[in-house]
Length: 477
Image (cartoon, rainbow, N blue to C red):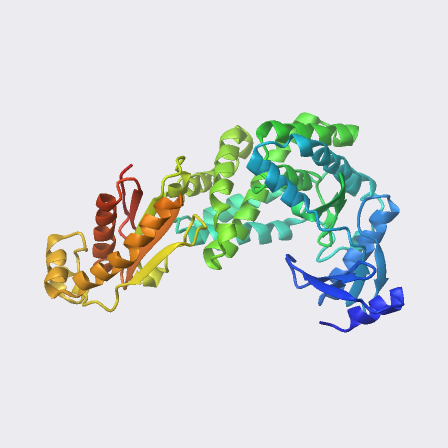
């Protein structure tokens, strides 16, 4: 750990820090430590301008009477600082518990406070804020939108496998950016940039706000949408409407035409969904982190609902809308929509050249079998246009014998696993067979495993997916 944070603590408090505990969850290269006694949060950041932005904003907001951490001490070189320890009760966790219980009533008052405080951040604190202090830029602009839209395109859309015309999509991205920029019409309003429940800490029933160092001047719609339509929060529609009404009431006449403002919110809801899908694509589909993979289906479901709700609001971007609708209907994302809690076993065949199928359930349970060590019928001319579903290929593999022994070993491993998952009430499991082209050996393996499991476990749903063949079948539906 950087020794400067210890020196800073001793200089400020006149005593050594007795306990130092790293705090997890930072989304950047900043490192946080809970230091005591007395208690403070030590922060070390490699990007000096980012540190400077947070320190300036925190002091400005405190001067305006907003509930943010106090800055106690700052290193001379700005590489480290001490801030007030706001505690460990995150609004995000409280919202998660409310969502699981289905009862948001006990926390509605806290959520209303967040809406009213947001208005104060945006209008009251934003009016005389020195935006040149912001990091990495002073204002919401077309370049920022280009970064966000291309993050979605490259990290999610391209990873999804959906075919699209990149030039036509870029044309509509340009139109979309113009629609968003024309909403920036309220003067010097502060855009928190990451205003959501994970950046709110509770002291009793009082919310305090953190992680605003990426803020800048920008349209007020952005933060309202980020909080109210946060995918993970999954607020009921009635609660969302109540929070929007609370915000509108607090902002008052400063919003001008309310009908226009509400229509503009649709644009920012779309932007925010594309942003989070970009993150889920990178963290989930590329880095294979389960917690992000599990959020893809809720985000796409929200996207589909938004496109249906928007009507003519997005009519100037027809290609983009059509592409997003096709994305929402992709088969690869459909299997997770089952309503009942039966065990669903997804059995894939795939080509290693195109990557191992991702586990969209986020469960992580199951097997991947590599069939490339088995005698390959694809090496012979008469089998090159056939697949593992054709009798000629089946006969080749079974007469050769290697595949038969391989499958017996695979079944011996999988069978007790499926039985135990059913006994324990699990809902998802995946089994994948891969070979070079996803055409012969893997197709044979997946087909025979699916048929075997469907017959052996009639209480389990077996979803067979020959990914490279574009063939799917559900057994025991």
